[in-house]
Length: 263
Image 1: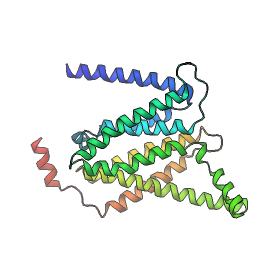
Image 2: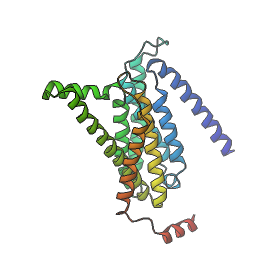
Image 3: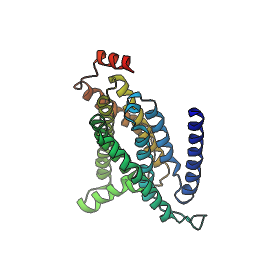
Image 4: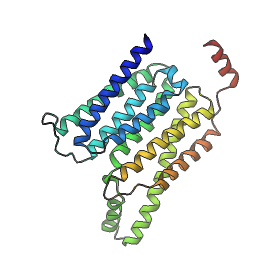
């Protein structure tokens, strides 16, 4: 009976999300991209046993999905909606309210107990990163704005400005995704997950985020998505996770076995 109820709830939620996506996508094109990223994050998170123990998985997935979608729509220029009662600003306000309503329970549950507090704390930087990415991954974050600023403010030549910005942006890619990956890795360690599990979890989430970033860029006229940038992001995350993980003690095997035997 419980399985039937869960199946009905899942199908109902999937239907509502689909309707929501169709309506919002009519006003903010390509909105399915952050939703797809959120869905893939949920698939990864739902497979983590250590997340289930703290009951943070669904809330985290909701925060990531709604946060990225809200800032994505905030950076987009809305088009005329087909439904007259669903004006773009009303839809944006609704997404923002939904984001807050999911974020607050996540923070309350995450920081409400001593066991889950370290996990929630390590998630704050990745959550902030995906929200920022939802805003700047489109035309607003294009390199042309930075190049024009260097030329007009510092009087640089175009070639010199392009070279500096190219190096700067690649460095930001490497370090930003490296930091996100390390925080995700440490969240797994804080949740008593084995090191290998924490590494795989972190890299899978980073891959989801990086893929969204590059796919979003293909929708902006002044940007170009690149598979090589995804590889650079994954390289940064892998480097930070492996190097940083050397200084982090793993969960003792004996403790894991004892805990498994008590379940």
